[in-house]
Length: 100
Image 1 (tube, rainbow, N blue to C red):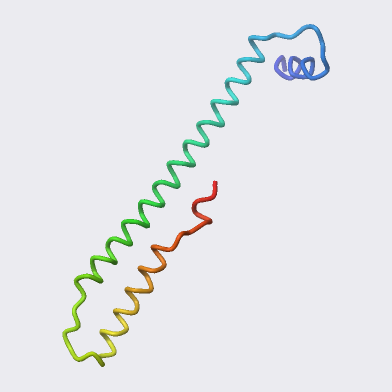
Image 2 (spheres, rainbow, N blue to C red):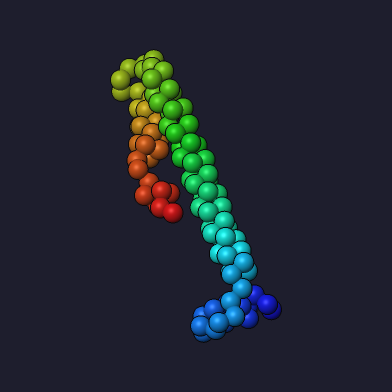
């Protein structure tokens, strides 16, 4: 209740302003906002790291992929196409995951 009264007196231009209380409020709100931004940055970093790991796994599988049969073998062709499509999806820049 004291906080609301102090903030309203500050807004309405009253002469009775408790500067330590106002500075504590501003410091607390600033600290909370900075903590929130830090947590969001950590979340984005973890998601990006997971995508990079998946892309590395797919690239390793693609590099070790061998066509054991004739080039016309459909099973090998489908598997190769699946690996390439998933790698392409992992490497593409995802704007929605980078926006904060």
